Length: 198
Image (cartoon, rainbow, N blue to C red; front, side, top):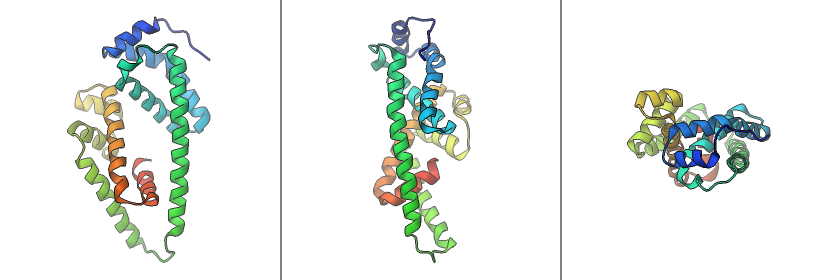
């Protein structure tokens, strides 16, 4: 169900394009529930739906200048959400199938020591990618994934906005995935992503 917001959408989008965080908050407060409900309805997962909400609004912030001509922003964001949800469901299904297939192909006599060595090797590949990240992306990734801080806590720690934290995290994860992919085959890549990012 569409919501009625106490603002002129075009005016707020213009302010958003100028980097106005208050304008972003107005849009976020007005539309996040619709986006969350859409993602939750298809994924049946609170966690995945919350991640999709974060990614949609990180995309909105990162590409805010391009949204000035958008008409009916809520419908536009819902369409973005459906597209991202579909991609996410396909990715999760593929990674789960690949993980199961990879596990099935492992020799039944493989020892725990060998598993541990593989885990170390995979982690080294990820850490190599992390070391190549720009400094702020690296710091955001390490605080979130290694120290378990929330985006809000990271923003406070680094004295940057939580929107910037989300943007850095999205870029860091994309880079790491692209870096890891050439080093391993498809099945192993899926297992790495499943172990380290989910």
